[in-house]
Image (cartoon, rainbow, N blue to C red; front, top):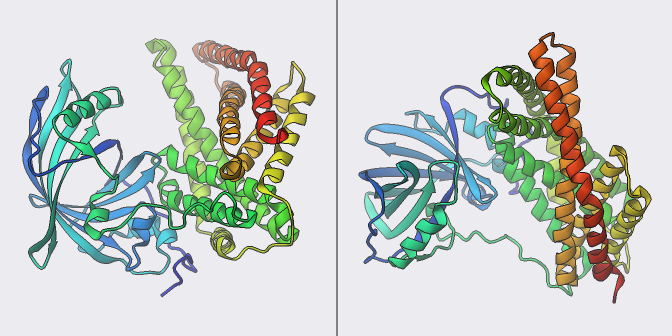
Length: 500
């Protein structure tokens, strides 16, 4: 058996995307109900009653569950499928393979090798669910499925535990109908759910952080250690989704975790052995650069796909060719990413991060978290003032980087400073959004001009010109907001870090 936090010494080959793998984002609201609850009358079509038998797999220590991941083998009317659910912020990504084999598919083991390590997958629970409900339609359009589940936790053919759950699952891209449905169901007797998946309830597992946030008066190193563990776990949790490459949010969150870890080590450097901290930051910089190209392409693809819907058919064709070119680049970036994520260098970085969370290499220091956050804010303030009223693209990007660093440092010190830090963090997010829009527009124009160099179509040149003009308008829109946001951010910073 490997240690609980150690990745395997040699990962398997990366999972390849094949047609039998189905992926979707699961957006749902869970509610609790008692034995007397009955579904109210809702507009729509009744769903046929279904029997679902699911056998869940995990390690003996429930490593997947603690990472917010579930793996199950589901049987329904003879159909057998393996389903893997990965966290996506407030949603979950469900990956399914229709397969009758009795052991978890190799592709799932490959995706999960980082959170699993060398530990074996074993059966941890079998749940039998009778499901009924209604597909809700509004203006003849399906918006959600409301289902009432009768769950039995089985062992040796006998039910050890029974409970009921109510779910509202979105079936199209709009969430606006879900709150109204939730309100109607609460009026009928439904109440708050604790948010745990059925498996957690069956095994009496909790979803809280394995280690609580240190008290506000705890030593600075305690907060640093806690943050290191939290961001490292976030990186590991989103590793499987980034490997699969079906949902951009997984890669985005993995990149965010990487940046937060770098910023944390930068901010806490006065508390740490410099050589040790710098070495780890260098490796995180390597990982960030590795994740960057694929993430940047995800952002551009989402933008141009949305833009294409506003064009007429003849203008959409050349833009579709441009999008197809970006998609090809994204496939290539994914191949590079997968090769590096199975490398010894990446595994060693994860091992070092996990070890650092438990055994920091520190020096004696009287610096407080507030001191450290103020130091990053001071650098941001200087950058904003140096930028002036008409900063160029490079200067704006520099301010964006320093805003992120100041925000991450504020998040580290947040529990010790209180509301002033929270207000600064919220304002920093708003600044990041605007500066990010400016940077995305610059990158989009670069991609467009590169595409235009290899196109001889007059229509493509016309559409490219329209797209370039839109990027300039995006930048102008961002610039109009910058100075006001900068002033507001500095005001929040003064209250958080300058006043005693």
